[in-house]
Amino acid sequence: MQEDLRIGIVLAGGMTKGVYQLGCLRAISEHFKPEQIVAISASSIGVPIGYSFLTGRLDTVEAAWKSIDIEKDGRFFPKYSGNQDILKQVGALVGASDELNASFYATLWNFSKRNVEYSLFNPLPEQKRREQMVASISIPIFGKRQWLDGATYYDGAFLDNIPVYPLVDAGLDVIFCIYFDRREYLFENSDFDQRVVKLNLFPINSCLMENCVFNPDKVDEMITYGYLYCKEKLEKLVLGKTREEIYSALLHERDNHKVEKRLTADTLMTALNRVSKRFAKRIVK
Image (cartoon, rainbow, N blue to C red; front, side, top):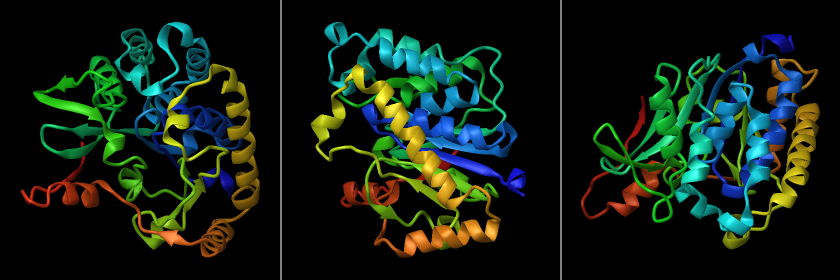
């Protein structure tokens, strides 16, 4: 039965492209009950979006996107991570009475210890959640460093932009992974990967500058695209199917693409620290 499926969601970082995730999440919520969403892991802009999904505040996030004043704040998205007004809005997404009915992981770069941390928000008090959410979107150079528990933290997407790692052993049946490049990755291992619905074919240019420039007039268009695209994928690969049929459809789709090894924190930091031999560690807290 589809009602028995245990669902996980991975929300990658993507700056302005995060708007597409709003539409995808609305499509997912139409076909699965809240209690079926067992775990969410997010990086960068995906963190406030994923948290708001679990707390029923996606409309608030949409309104925030549309309310950005480009005359006052500019269009260059990375600078928003240093904008105190915008950071206050992000922090305000955390409420004192928030109940998270699914495990929620935020990816953080512990700059002091040179590792990536996947912080489980569920046991954290309100202030800790707020601080870590702000840290999760703090881009080096543009954003102010976040000093938490005696260490400097930044946006964890720099080390793991598609944070599937915390969900590998969560006992999930289907994982919706929303990311923003067109490569077909093998996530972690073949057994886990065959349960991943990869949502990555968005109408975006590979030009870095284009992806950094925000246009509030396109928010509705991007949300609609994300919704319709995700709904089409659901109907093709998941809805009305048994587990075996879902996995067969996902395997067939994977076999029709060139699968690539993904760059993770381990390989990235190994390269960066080749001389000192200090390697990245992946820590689920």
